[in-house]
Length: 441
Image (tube, rainbow, N blue to C red):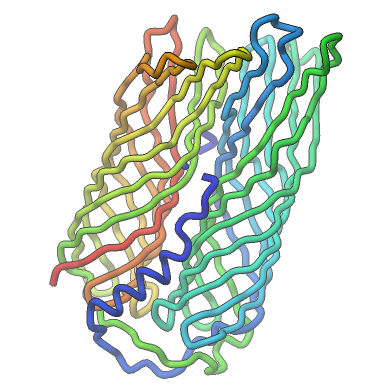
């Protein structure tokens, strides 16, 4: 797995969905005594996957090229894995709402790779960094929390590579700071332990990384990295079993039945370009999508299995813009619509929450659109491709008929031959989605 916005994933929709659901559907209440205490200090660890998209722009090119003033590509992208250690403190301000602060350290290898045969090879990686910030959470039920977070982030980027088969090595390091936002879901496993799944988007600003001196003015290369990460982790909360939690309503939910649902998703895509023995992994894109779905689950007791079908439409894309001063020429490569047919299997981690994995078939439409100043736009390439998706998530009951959840998917599509002088493209996607489902009794 080495191989959309910059917008928070509708974070407050967690609380909004739960509030609407409680108002619209009577809750079947199970008498649950005060138990898990969400207030207090915690430590944790996790592993995850992610993708980075580097928005690269070259400015003041008029004196060099004679006709192009600037070039912008959003972007150069890559994937990878990371590990994380965390410490934090939460405080319950009411029976259902909490506020907290956290500090995380992470390390990994997320980034693009360039394989140019004997000419050039290079890796640009997110090596290590940290985040500090705060979070606001809402208890859907006594054992499961939905939350949004925001804060400060710092990251070390490292470029390593060589020219001419290793004869000329080169390297580059840069530290960046920026902001991070995200959403997640956390549920009690037992005792003081919780299971957490989380999405974060980090942006490190647009800065000049290199300048060429030219008689007509300096030529600047600017880079703006944005990072999408997806984490699975565990936390240990000190004092969680001291009975400090207040009893709240718990829905009696049966997982067996047909359901319909909606989802909002965000994430990144990376496309590997291959030609004449060389490859760039890859071209990065990002965006958001909406989804409708339907499925059936069967409750076996401690385990649940089911099938589902979904259809989605989004705006995830990569963009190339050429500015000629008096006008511009733009190319957008888009992943717009598609569908999935998936099976899932899950285990009840507590009274009202399911942890599950999924997998199955995926189909996606891609297109490349060109537009020019004063000339409108035109599709210049379009293709459909098959693939597969795998992933997992947490889903929790908020009424006797409704659930909300948080889910991650990794989708890998087959190679597509575009008949452009041997150019092959292979795209993978990583998306996080907030889900809401209504199950028919």
